[in-house]
Image (tube, rainbow over all chains, first blue to last red; front, side, top):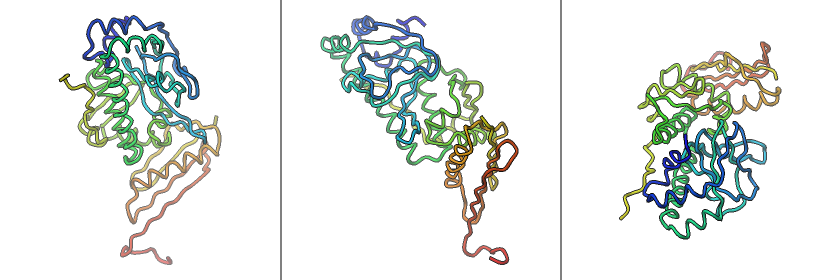
Length: 239
Length: 78
């Protein structure tokens, strides 16, 4: 998908003028095609660019002292997962591709320049980081209070809403090339427990994950089990 | 890497038909302990929950959880 079309889909462009959008497009200094499992930036590194996901999936994660990885979030086309790097220079977590991915890079200095001239862009970027935080809060509730099946259901429901917003859900199916091991790292469960939950969901005709495709067979049940409330991600109309 | 199989017996049985490749027995034991969460979430008072871990076909570990509720008939000899 040409970079222009993808950039239009970037959520932060909601409410931005054509001029603002063009200014952002102009500072994407490079676009790279990365293989699955490629580190975009690692914990401890100093970041000099923000990236924008143009296609594919990525994830943020931290590895505990004990060597256990916790995935913090998944990212899809249109997301800018490391905006905070502009102000918090040293990364506090890893950003890695989950699948093959096309990633655009925006130099921090160029972005700062655009922000200083265009307050609407600054607001939009700020909004992006706040939306990030909404998702983090839900993940905290998931990890702290939801049983295994509910954690899985919540994740699927969240991904479905986010992917539907960029037209990547068709007939209640979407591509999500994730292994059970990676799901385990995201959901704070053992891989075998993930296997058990998925077997159970398949047997009950609720959900199926097979060959990189997630099929939501019973959306109402998934939403109910996951305790999912439609995410309020759209900005209010400006006053 | 050896292939390990996990079987949960009890009210809601489960078996990893295709097995799981894990580095070694120590990792398989960690997986077994993590699976206690399943009992934590589902065990009803008076029910039992058993987890068996096999390496290829050989039993390797077993975890038994037995629960009792006062007022239920206890088995002879207890």
